[in-house]
Length: 183
Image (cartoon, rainbow, N blue to C red; front, side, top):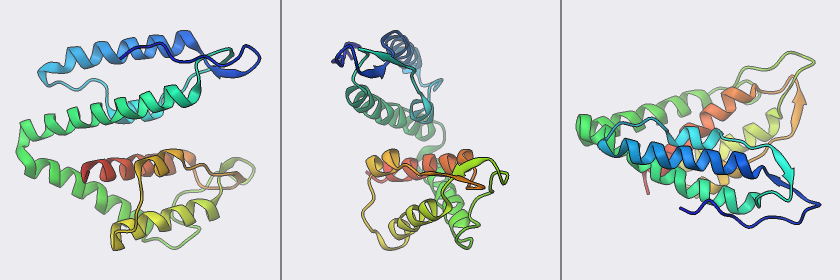
C-alpha cells in the first residue's frame, strides 16, 4: 500500500502527514511480521487510531478509506488465526459471544443501556445512541440492512450526563466484528 495520499490545500486542516506515514509503516511491518499467524495489530486497533490535524495534510477521506480496507484485511487475518487454532467452531463461538453481549446490553431499557457520565461531564446523547442501537437490534433480530460504514461513521452529539463514550464505542466495535464476520 502506498502511503502517499492526496493533500488538501495549505489553508485547510487535514491529517498529520508524518503520523499517517508512521502508523502505516508500523501496520505494514506488523502485517509482514504476523504472516506466520501471530496477531499483534488488530482490526480494533485500526478503528481506534486518530491523527492530529495540520494545514495541507493528507485528505481525511482518502486516509480513512485506506484504513477501512486495512481493517478488513487485519480482521480476516484474526479470523484465520482463530480458525487455525480452534477450527470454525472456535470462530463461531467467538462471534456468537459478541452477539450475545450486544443483545444483552441492548435488551436494557432505553436511556439506561450504558453507564452515564457524571452530571457535568459530556457523554454521548442517550437518545441518539438508543436510536442507533435500535437499528443494531433490528439488524440482529430482523435482518435489517446495516453496513460497516454506517457503524464506523455514526456520530453522536455530546450531552451532559450522557452515555459513557468508551462503553458505546466498545459495543460498536463488537457490531463491526459481527457484520464483518457474516460477509
